[in-house]
Length: 292
Length: 235
Ligand SMILES: Nc1ncnc2c1ncn2[C@@H]1O[C@H](COP(=O)(O)OP(=O)(O)OP(=O)(O)O)[C@@H](O)[C@H]1O
Ligand SMILES: [Mg+2]
Image (cartoon, rainbow over all chains, first blue to last red; front, side):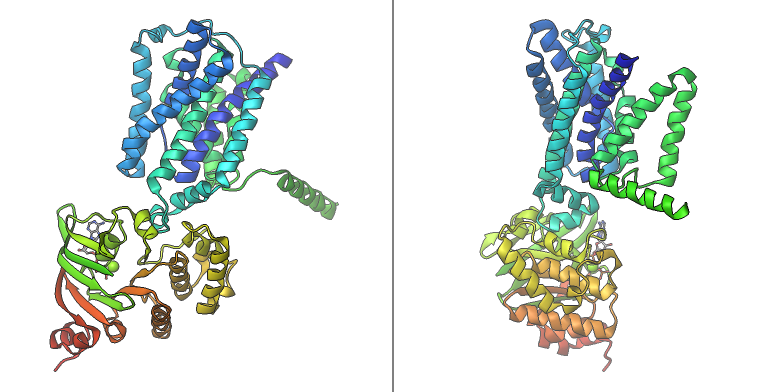
């Protein structure tokens, strides 16, 4: 039971890393990606191949997975962002990118096609995932509070006005995309070394959609919001596993409910903080006393 | 200071500017007058680097103007766009600070904030208010102040009087003169032809993308064609 719970937590944290990365991109520049599963897959395969075929050190493989995803992020981001594609066209371009990567993985020699890679060493433990999550959250937080973070918010709110303020639209967007690609790659690497077996069909647009849904449901412009949303989305289907098919229905209903009752997402553009939680608790207590 | 010659700008098939030439002397106010759709905003956006010219050249201080908006701003040209485009979800103060995005001199920025409060006393009372909740006139003030926070040497104002009551229009134009007197050159696009021409050193009239008359502000005020078409004065 304990290992089951720690398994779910590890699993959630892996997705939290990817979602926080995407939150920096979508939540702070306003561009939607429907292909982030590709970065996840690239990281998973790069890291997995390195440890599986070449016995590379796990951490080095993880970093390489992130680096490879970041590199691909530059390759895909450079032409699409330079061309200033409108947000909907950009989303379609990323959708195509995601599918292209999956097809590539299915046909490459080194990835062993659709059969996938079985027997990747299981290196990802709960402490490992937790440690990486903390690092990613810390970097993301620093990014948001930097000049680039402010620039990114300005870009999201009104990119034409942002350009008039002297913000280099392309640079800010590319930087956010690359950061999110690296996060996706690292998450993928952790994933590969957690489940020990990867195949291309694990990284479909369903995964991309799920990541984007977490960011939107958690709050565009928040980091902790998407993190919390991801945990909820991963944990609830797991908890409801006994109810088999109904869990997908519950998942859908939850998403619809959030969008109807909190269109700005769980946290809007705010962050979860200890001070905030305390204030909320004391408010609750005060209200309780008032009633009592 | 700024010299535009033979400028053409297209939106796909639509030819929005045809062979526009314009000279801006340092320290002057230049008015660009014209009816709806004449191409005033197109001209402003092109100078600011937000639209690419199809032909022609723009020289700024004898050098070609860069083609990226952020580079243009770095060279000291700032556009206060039509309809203001303030950040509605940021406070007035945060909006002003956005204007100083490229600057790193914290001291200078603080000093300039104070300068803005002197120039626009209304804003001083509303620093913590979200820009989206300001009145139209206050928003225009905030937009101009945000533009000035970048310390431009050339300020492009696109229809600052849009949607303002006559008294407020007077107010804005008075401020424009003050800004010029403090040393900033101004290009002003306006439909309020009379006020704009009265205060402009130089002016030009755009009609469907062409310059139909150009001269000093006073000349244009007395030009029979302009009087008839834009000032509504019949002989
Ligand atoms: N993004 C665009 N795409 C296509 N055509 C455009 C676009 N923006 C402007 N135009 C066209 O270019 C012409 C000039 O427009 P512009 O906005 O420069 O006029 P304007 O003089 O600023 O008018 P107004 O006083 O109404 O603001 C118009 O015919 C307009 O329809
Ligand atoms: Mg206009």
